[in-house]
Length: 110
Image (cartoon, rainbow, N blue to C red; front, side, top):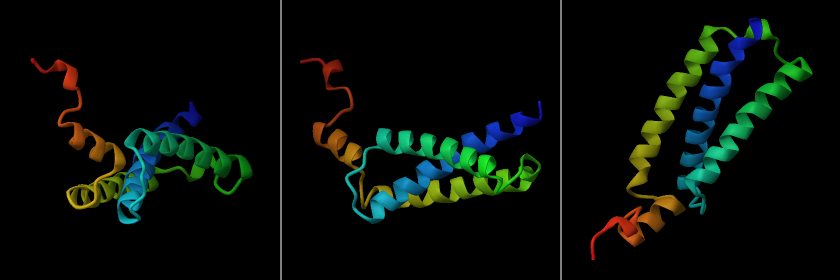
């Protein structure tokens, strides 16, 4: 039961990392798609926490509420920054959907 504490860290870590990667991609004008960023964020969160716990850098007892709260607040801040940058610097997947005019063009009547 003690190891269930890592679940919020995996979840919020992936959200934080996805938002961080999206902001970095926008600022660096990288041609990244959202699905690729989400995959990297999920794997990075799992791999990072597993490496930190496995190497002994942090212990399971160090995973308290304060770091989870910091991840949550940081995620909201990064999401806000990403939203502000979205209209000026779109990601690759956003440019493609804007060029096509719709995400699902096959649903429109002729």
